[in-house]
Amino acid sequence: MKTAERIVIVALLLAFIGVGYAGYYAVQKDRSDLRAEVAAGAFEIPDAVAQDELPLSDQSDWRRWYPNTIPVTLGGVSVQASVADTMSTRIKGLSDTPFLPENVIKLFAFGVPGTHSIWMKDMNYAIDILWVAEDGAIVHIEENVSPETFPKSFSSPVPSWFVVETKAGFVATHTIELGDELVIPL
Image (cartoon, rainbow, N blue to C red; front, side, top):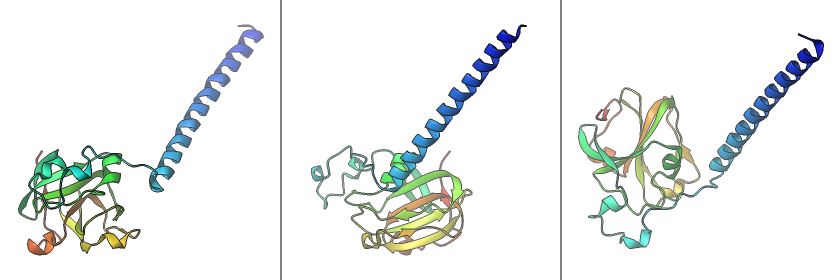
């Protein structure tokens, strides 16, 4: 192989490495910018149903607000869980919903252990918040958290995989305690 051929091969190799690094840097920069925008609350997820279509007093048609639910058991109580398992659904949570029925919970599935902070941005009612470990055991509870607490955030001192939001008073009504279990069907 001649010297000129070696120079061309090295130049091409350096060009490929440079393009790869530039692409990697661009993706990381976009991710960083997106995380900063999400943290700043720059995204709003439009509701599938306009809020004024369902009167606040009419909770019989709760599936309009929580259409995709799965049956779970929380502390021995059978409920329907509206699952938030993507970044956008976790960001949205229960914000801007007019009510949360007694038999419905919001289940935030993170899939990694962490403190998972929850805040009351754009909330219309108080809730109970429960943090649940990977094995299903409840590890922390905050009761009757009101919308007026925003921008304060709430988190568990113990790492959790899930966060559950219920109607305020659910924990007291059903005597839910630390160590009680969340059972999710396979």
